[in-house]
Amino acid sequence: MSALSRVLIAGALSVTLASNCFAESPTSSGTGFTVTGDGWLMTNAHVVQGCERIEVKGKGDASDPRIDATNDLALVKVQSTVPLKPVVFRQAPTRLGEDIVAVGYPLASLLADSVKVTTGNVNALAGLRNDTRYIQISTPIQPGNSGGPVVDRDGFLLGITSATFSKQAADEIGITAQNINFAIRASVADLFMQSQSIVGQSGGRAADRQPMSTADLSDKVTPSVFQILCYGKPEEQASITPSGAATSLPTPSASALIDARGYDAIGFDYRTIKDVTFASCHEICEGDSQCKAITYNTKYRACFLKDNVVALIRNGDAVAAYSSAKAADVIMSDFTSYSGMDLPGGDYKRLRESNYLQCFTACIGDNSCKAFSYVPKKSECWLKDTLGRPKATKGVELGVK
Image (tube, rainbow, N blue to C red):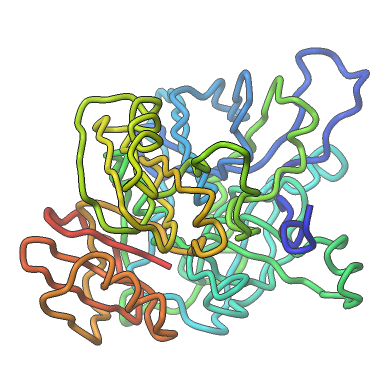
């Protein structure tokens, strides 16, 4: 494992319990919070992925887990006899330096098992390597915090606690990095919810309202926050590194194509094959000398053959594969793609008569660009320097750094 891939560790999973615990003891724990009144909770993917049973403490077992491993997010559903109180997503953009509060269940097996509140600030508007899916925060993060909400002084959601700078990485670089923690932006979580047809609430502060004290904020937010217990997860998964920590390419194998699950290969499509399996798509490309890469859409069972590949972009509905001969030239980008979605506002440049590849490369080569919207019917590309609130929009292909 490279030093970079150890930079982030799950701030998240609780200390794995001793091996002599009873079989029904949880193997790890994290935090989740309500996002709908009918029982949907959000947490990190690494908190619930691989669990044989998921319990939301005080609410019983959770069901129907929805996983976005690429962005380290998950949704689970609980049954409740009374409507739950959801955390409200903030409409206004996050500001550098603003006061924040993180809520969660850190070190629940060692400290008090009650919910805990910590305060801090937004230190940076991006994560490692300028990854704009994250914000950097100073609120202390401990094992068990992962998946908990990070809110502003009005109780509106800014992010989801995800990871912290690891001691091992600090030791390797010879610098004692203090209190460097990361939260996934609420806008990324909102996109994930929309992709699952789950609608949350959003809002903003009234003009005449004063920020709340930490005590009042705790009273408002903590009823929406729950400890999540994982049963039956293998111990070796207890120190999963969140997705996005490393950006190195897979080592080329002896096979003609290198697979990249959860990615879309960016290149020129020359053939589309519908209603096929990934294995068939893979085989067709290997037998075609023109094919240098494929993208397989798992939702629509569609295979896209490409005669070139320049980069990989995150896409939870896709599996990419590319020629091992192109491995040295392919960029593993920090972008995530979404179909039928837009981020209104923030447009600072329009490119006419462009294609998706040109739109992508224009954004990746521009430090001001945080996202782009491509409209295929108009062959039009819009570059954005801010991340607004996501909105379902037909006919728009969205890419977010």
